[in-house]
Structure formats: C-alpha cells, structure tokens
Length: 114
Length: 111
Image (tube, rainbow over all chains, first blue to last red; front, side, top):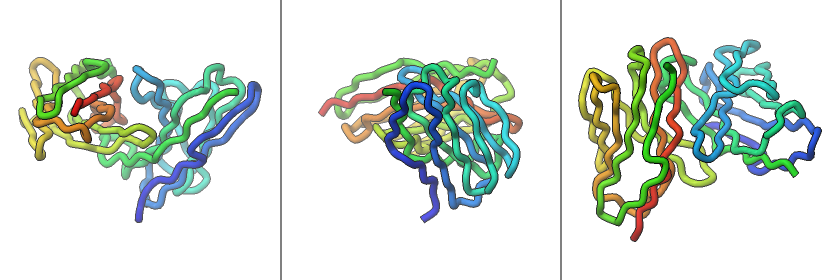
C-alpha cells in the first residue's frame, strides 16, 4: 500500500538536544512538507521540498533543519535552537508543490521536551 | 493576505443535528478549497474540496457551500454522527502556492 510513514510515533527530547524525525513516502510524489500542529493554531508550514537536493523555508523554519537526499525521504531535525519544540509534527507529500492538490499526510510524531 | 480564518474553534452538536464550520479568506488568487478531517493521533485526510466556479458541492452527508463575492466557504455535516467527532481544517491554495490551513475546529457529536 502506498503511503507516508513517520517515525517514531512518540519522541522525548532533553533540553539542548537535537532530534531527528523520519518521514518516508512510497507514493512517488515530488513534493514533501513538514508541518507543526499546536492546539488552536492549525497546521503551520516548517519546510517544504519540491525536488531532491532542494528545499525552502516555510513560515516557522527557525530552529529546524531538513535534507532531501532521496525522493522518498525528508527527515526533519529539531535543533536546540528551537525554544518550544513540544508539538505534533506532520509530514505530507503531494505530486506537485503548488496547487494544493492531493496532499497525503503521515500519522505524525508527537515530540515532548523533558 | 495568505491567512484563512476558521470558526468556531470548537463545536458541540447532538446526534442527528447539522454541524456548520465557516472559513474566510482574503487572497483572491486562491482557487482550490479543501476540507480535511483529523482524528486524534492521526494525520489529516482529505474530506471534500471545491473550486470557485461552483457554489456548492455535496458528497454524502458533507456539503461545501462557497460564496465567492464574500470570500467565504463553509462545511455542513448533515445528520451528524458520533463517528464524525474529529478536528476539521479548511484550507486554500492557488496554482502558485502551497496549501494554507485554517486554525481548525474540534467537533464533538453527542450520542
């Protein structure tokens, strides 16, 4: 079955640590996205990538980094510079980066700072 | 101008009632308006979508109403069921941009 796999489902981070969230898709989609979800604030775009080896900042990129070395994979690193990282992180993919069509979401990773 | 404003933030409806969620936008370049449904601990899934060339689209118990002049669109859930209890997001995009999401509405349907 085609889809998006995010791992881990739950992640705990200590103060000052970097952590990496995994996102893999087998839909052959060109575009991939990372969103952060906080209660009452909807889905805010962190980074997106339209093609391999290229990515653009979204609305809240500070304290995050990404890479896109393979079409199927778009990992997100939450760095120690992100002061309030506790949130639900969603990865998505689509055939194209613009137009808004055919977004498929993963099941998310809940990150908690301890 | 890229914002999509969604209301209400939360909604409680009795089983069998009508649930109505509203969204408003400013960017007249937006030409695609989807609604997503999200259950706890899951990612959002596309529920229904509309383009501005029609004023209404219906799929089963779910209907989108679109008012281009007012730059507003709404989701109506007829005969609401407890299984419809979820968070609903409206969104909008244009051919040149990614989706912009509303802030979400947490719907609770009481049995």
